[in-house]
Image (tube, rainbow, N blue to C red):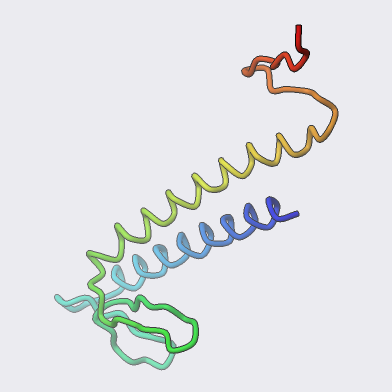
Length: 114
């Protein structure tokens, strides 16, 4: 069950990050100013995004330039896709259970002593 949860969380992170990139690109494309004009839901202008730790006494940094945010978000998407791949392989192994079946690319280990 933990493997499935990890896959689901990684997929959610990918979807959220991709949506964030789309929203930033759309806002920047609509901007008629030389300086990019990104606004929050209340219409307040922001010069960048925020990065932070959300737990008790968390810390945030503000106005992280969009030029820096894009590579960070893209790296996060790439990392989450790797997590999906690895946990998917783990799920396949877990699905085999105690049947003793092996993946076609692995060799069976002889556990009998001679």
